[in-house]
Length: 596
Image (cartoon, rainbow, N blue to C red; front, side, top):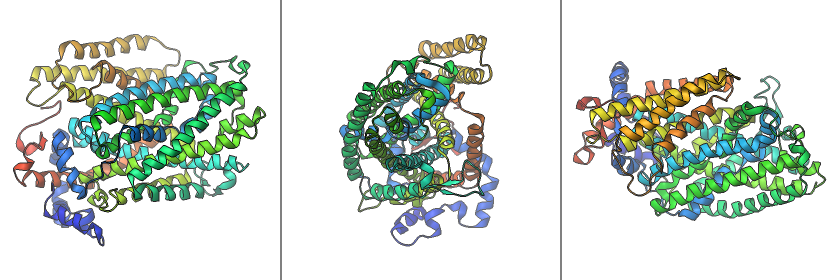
């Protein structure tokens, strides 16, 4: 095992009653005196965690061992493809399409889906290479620990957890909206009104809570069982989508396309940033790599295949909706159901509503499976309480993590409107996807003992040019509606950074099984597009994002930093099996990443 005796003792107790050692078993929390000394050492410990990078072997063996029991390898590429479809096609397409077409893009919402689809596919490629080479439940958290160090991984982890909680809450509230349509009611007819709260939080949704509770039971019973349910349900879902496209196009009126882009390019990109929510979920598939029989073959097929199918379906559905009904008349809560009613096919709205409910149910289920595995792997490092890392011996699933994540999701779903959730979710997701693309470039171009100091400096400079130019482009887009001079400056800078990497920095590592093509162009473009879309999100969402980031930083400096530091140091003293588990720890006199 990778922790000391205290950590192992805490793990063994989890089948029984909980104790302090289940949550804070590390030396820094054994007494108030120890905790005070740990706080005094915060700067040194922070430096250590920033400069220290995990190694592939540690994530694959030692960190995974913290769960005591193995997750069962039961999934193949077919399971992953349907998990991907089930994870993605849900509330985004069935709710946000109407909202964004009406308020921001008009019929050009199909172009918004193309833009966010391209961004999502680029991210899929980056995720796939990591998932093949580091097939663990931690997903992007594990990838960033290996390439960018503990601190950046934790910042990403906080946003990963936010992404899943918010995403699940948004889908659960949308479930209520379509259920109301199926029952010929308005969505708020099934919600309680708390007049003392603000309008964004006063519509309380008990149905969403019940749906999440049912999903929780399914998720903890069996991963393979969840896969079978998702597979059967997704077949029905695809049939409903085909029905919507065929039946909807039979009622198409090209006059509804007379004003294709009423809000211009700005509206298209603004909608695209929000509609990125519709592609969220595929990253949950990467967390199932630990339960995949043949990751090198199954993950690329499952991830890329499901994303290609999803993008095509989204574009066809968006075109169909805007041909059936003028964008000005689209219903914001249940656009497809109401559109069929408006063209005289009232009976069809029930089929659409049933299909949407199925889609949202599988999105919730796959999200629940994925988010619990993220939380499990984060807890394995002790950045969160190790009690959450426990894998149930009988079911082979992380029961504690599943229940905790879905409880948080239910609380948010009970209070918060969809519009707030979707914007905030897009920020977290785009930020994480940008970091994964950045980490992929680091993985290919930097390896300790291989990359020379001169090449490390060049890599740092070119990466900085890519990041700064991408941020400047997004900022210029957000602040200068009619300008173009800024792009003439930032675009060439991005190009110089990418060409510089391509021509002047040799790759230090080749992928062992499956690799992203066109490196560094593809990940560099992923960084640029993700950051650019961030420039189209409203200020209030960034404020909420900032508050959340501050909250997780406070937690990290008070608890997570010291717990993970103690765990790493205790592990490094446990014997030869831990040698080279991490590189760059401050006490060893070395550094890592782009710094050492």
